[in-house]
Image 1 (spheres, helix red, strand yellow):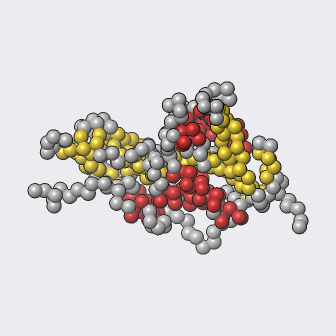
Image 2 (cartoon, helix red, strand yellow):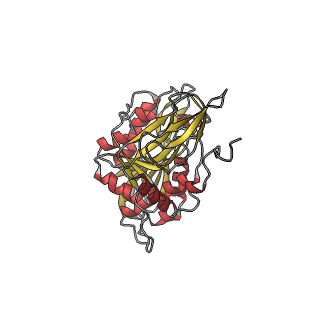
Image 3 (cartoon, protein in one colour):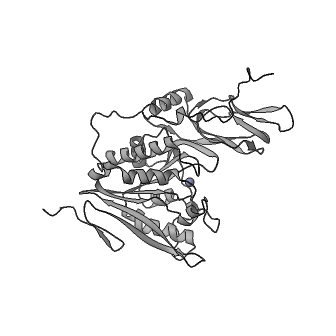
Length: 358
Ligand SMILES: [Zn+2]
């Protein structure tokens, strides 16, 4: 057998030959119980040389769609023709994941602790180890998130404004919507930008739920970026999916009063100023106060809670000059995936003011 010309990949004392896989544990700390905690990194080293891509999920411990997205990517046959190297971490925030919690055991948000500190708290050590051992070795990173508990997000990418490379890769990823965001102190995305590594942050679905459409968009998007970068062979005869809708700004509409909340529009829909998006019903009376849109765009996030306090954020709108055009684009894009979010009836309490009227 001729020796492979692709050099081995060296990672934390392990040598991974071309065409091989390895799972390596990076020690990060110790719990009060005395148990140690580590970051598990799956390394897939292609037979041919190429770029190094890092994939991370569960930086927030209860956001499980990304864990499944990475599991499916690692199990896919497509990786047999991988050029370059994948560094995949299905669970970054192990202590929070074990507790099914967004936050670390000390109640801190790991995504506000970057760049971290090797002699700091457990979360700070995880952040530091991830940056030094994984991100520093990678050419780019895709970080998978979801909305919070009972807060669903339309599959969407968030990238740093003024990052042309991230924008090119977001085009290739082709999620329904891409939000152009500013830096956020302490986040993994901002640390990546400071290290000069493009970072695509994917959001889809809600915490503690596996959502088929978000998972499909995530897997397909990551593989499309790998094709764009030459890490996977181009798919002949496959047409380019519909372009992602870029939103420069987003904002929340809030509950005008406390009570029972019924949303009237599903994720992905066009929203116009003055439109009724849902209503809050008085618990002890017949009053129904509408939630009205104060901005135009696309509904990219929504609470699924049936009860709200006054001022609770209920509808997240990605602003767009021509909402109808954006909606058409999103519907067209979803037609390229079977069983997408569109087919799911996501208005929990169907309400028809005409037929329901007594
Ligand atoms: Zn998150």
